[in-house]
Image 1 (cartoon, protein in one colour):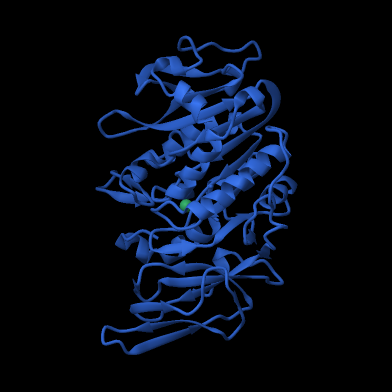
Image 2 (tube, protein in one colour):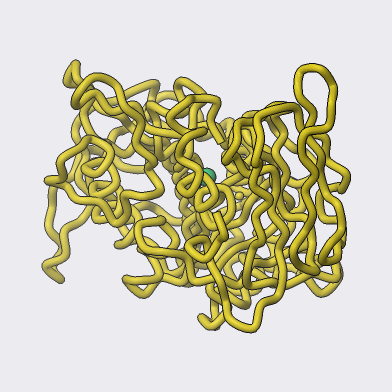
Length: 401
Ligand SMILES: [Zn+2]
């Protein structure tokens, strides 16, 4: 959750976001130099014999990186990493929100997997997870490709906030993970940005995808994956992570991983701990899991590491929210990932005099999957949520808010 008042009032949206939106240094150094980093000799607007549009470069070079407005990773040379910017929506000044893209292109044919981060601007561990995976790849030993799209909501990242600052009627804040698949002719820059990325970068270049997130500002979450386990590849990928929780939930429309599923690209969302800061322990778990995914699909070689089977994962399909009835200071009585039982007291609240003004209990047997990390809250704020198993899958919309 952001510390912005708009967010604290938008509780339903927040819960959806925090739950359901719910992750070779030498090689890198070599390819981080000026324009030589790029494997493309000149900007290209060619059309392939197949009739499919190939990569289009704008002719700009920014910080030594070429800028593409359409990317076909089939155009890129094998056995190396390609660092480039993808041209997103324009700013009011006419410049573009360019997004950082790394493609590790293998020397043999194979699966194309896409790793996305930064759809929310305060989720740093998601970006670092993807950076770490990319740094461990050696394209000369790879089949297929791994594409990283690191900083999707550029203006939100610039100000370390969850949402995209939209200047349509004075600044308001748009949640980029309610915009997919976007619309290149949409009525906001965020919608157009999503449309450009979806149509010209993500969809054409992905056989599988993972959209990494974290908790929100003011609200931390356990290490968990969320996705629809009825989709075979989603189930396989989610269970390759040595994490404590999986939320089996076909998330609502307009989130990125669902929009990708809708066009036939299996995708899910890892949640890599708290927002704003780097969480090295959780990052390590999600890096290990992502490397497992790449091994499972034959993109890289090597034995699969620890998986959900090794971490005794708890699989739930519903989340029980603990909603503040009072304003005041929050004291949690349970830890993240702790097993709780129905009726167990999980939090209390004090007023400014130190008097206890509210006590909160879990309504279910389950695991603590999220806790408010800001010490104060307003009535209506979520203080936590408990992942549990329900006879009927109850998603964000079923919360007794
Ligand atoms: Zn997020």
